[in-house]
Image (cartoon, rainbow, N blue to C red):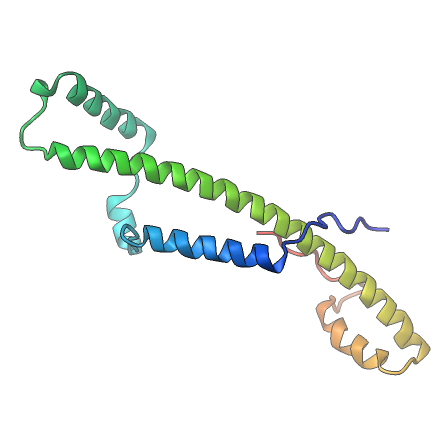
Length: 162
C-alpha cells in the first residue's frame, strides 16, 4: 500500500486570502524598483560574481575609511544608495527563495497525495468496469488514455516535481 497523506496541512480560505494580499502588498511596495530585463540585457549586464563583489566591497571600505583616496568622477552618494539597495534586494531574494523552496516542498507532497489517490481511484474504476457496473466503463475508457499503450502498464508515469 503506497504512502498517502504525506502533507495533511491545508491553508484556510482566510489564510489563502491573507497570503495573496501579502503578495499583492509586496508587489506594490516593490513596483518602483521592478525592472524586466530582456535576455540581451541580462547577458550584457549580467550579475557580478563573488570576486567582483569582494572588489566592490573593498572600494566601499576604502571610501568609508579613506574618502580622500576616492576618485571624484564617481557619484559616491549614488554608489552608497546602490550598495544599500543591493544588500536589501539580496536579503529579500534570499528570504523569497527560501519561502519558494518550502512552498514547492509542500506542493510536491500534495501532488504526491493526489497522484496516489488518483491511482487508487483508477484501480477501483478498472475493477468496477470489469464487473460491468454502470458508468465505470466510460470512466475507465476516459482515464486509460493516461497509461502507456505498450505492454501491460498498471500505472501512469510518475508525476514530475518542479
